[in-house]
Length: 242
Image 1 (cartoon, rainbow, N blue to C red):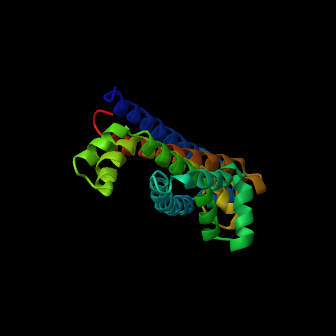
Image 2: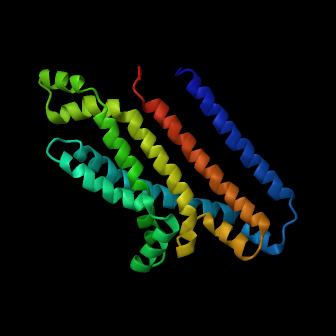
Image 3: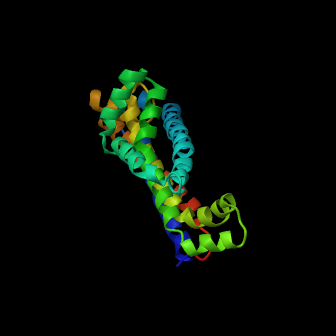
């Protein structure tokens, strides 16, 4: 079963690269107006992509710093009673419309990069938190008791038994959050947060179909690539035998 996974990953990467090549060839041969040519210049596309990745990476790091320790804390016996209230709060961020959340936070925090980061973190924290809790809860209690019976401390059991066994579920949540971040980061353009979303809004506002289509495809391909990276890490980090 595991031998088939790398093949699937290679196929997914191949599809992404082929789609990117088709997009590049289309842009090179499409009749572009001066405005379209300026907006879709390689330097401009690279700058927008870097901005988009920066939004995604910074938000993802903050999400991991918050959600992973919090998820571990909520599975400990002394703090398990907090799991319900904390999950309810995290669900509010996920349930709220992304564009509404981003705009409301922008009015509160000011327009720009960091307002977009806060909105993205609020929107993406739930999958990581939920999967961390679920992954740790699914660990066989007999293995935990066996570790304690061998004289291992609670911290040793957590890091040597629970977390390694919970890795597949935790990584699945992280991958989901990353894909959500890439897609939602396109909305950062509405509050001057940068990113590839500016191509979409420019295409809509100026009725530039080529710019709109190119921006939409680039965001989709970036999300697919991030998903591919997540799947690769998930495959490599999963303990053998799981």
